[in-house]
Amino acid sequence: MNRETLAIRLQSQKSSYGEHSVPLYLTSSFVFDDAEDMRAQFAEEKEGQIYSRYANPNVEELLQKMATLEGTEAGWATATGMAAVFTTFAALLQQNDHIVASRSVFGSTHKVLTELLPKWGITTTYVDVNDYEGYEQAIGATTKMVYVETPSNPGLDIIDLERLSAICRQKKVLLVVDNCFATPVIQRPVESGADIVIHSATKYLDGQGRTMGGIILASKSIIDQIKAFARHSGPALSPFNAWILSKSLETLFIRVERHAQSALEIARRLEQHPAVASVRYPFLESHPGYAIARKQMSLGGGIVSFEINGGIEAGKKFLDALQLFSLSANLGDTRSIATHPASTTHSKLTPEQRLESGITDGLIRLSIGLEHVEDIWEDVLKGLS
Ligand SMILES: *Cc1c(COP(=O)(O)O)cnc(C)c1O
Image (cartoon, rainbow, N blue to C red; front, side, top):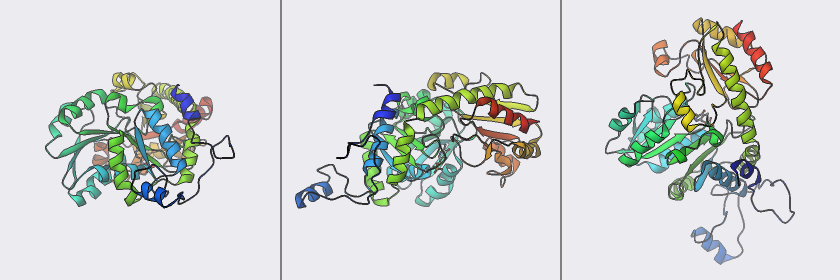
């Protein structure tokens, strides 16, 4: 069956009521048939739910769908995207291990790599996103994984996953890909050779700005290691959020396709506008990673970034003139959202430090929503004038 259909039709076993839409299993624990059943489940000789920190039917359903969509054997769900990132590191790495990461990663991931993991002697070497020799050279005897984001947040850098995974395989290190911006609708990193896929489910997977969640997808043997760590350290996703997220996946394909269709249209129009210095969108021919994006992505995604003429002041004026767009830190929502990193998330950095993470003073990030594309464009024009 096609993935679009499976995202809608995969469902946990019906209860005795024969409900059409899956019920919410708000229960912290589960009962056993008898002492022997209880013993066997605790000994992991028999599959069962036991306790919702370990497993829950709503969480299992979400994971089954996501593993199917990404093409992996198994998965593990966490309370936030960052819990998925941290759990992956904490479960799979030992003291004094080394990570190689692409320079352009999500802000909190950067904090984990540079400020939290060093507490356990785990260090990171950053490599410029497209410096494949650099990745190869940075991998040393203690390196256990290469960690990348493509497209990256907020710079929309594109990394060639086939090329990087060939290096990782040769060097026998794991390739971990944060696939949050693309979703499995657009890009399936495991098919390009990645070992682990991470999602902030808070973004497109929910898609309506309601709930937080994170998902780790990989082979059964890797997920078993993650489970062994996470069952006891407790980053589990709540059944309620899993129920919302699983329902959201029923509309994932149709939403992501529309986000991408409108984003491409807005990106093309922005490129023609005199107040705009440059536009970044993976499916614009002017994007430096255009050829790779066309190879590994089926659509360009829903995020467009552009450089407005006039620096920080022009960026703030743009935001203030918007009427439809929300000024908010989220993305991947049905509602269009605009952010100006230089005056907000990255304002504490010096202009030089900002440039190092690819943030210019006039950079605006648009998360294109599901409103009518002409209404979205009209609002962008208000900002630009
Ligand atoms: C938002 C985001 C995260 C973190 O997810 P949370 O759900 O906010 O914890 C990780 N990676 C990327 C690319 C993101 O955009």
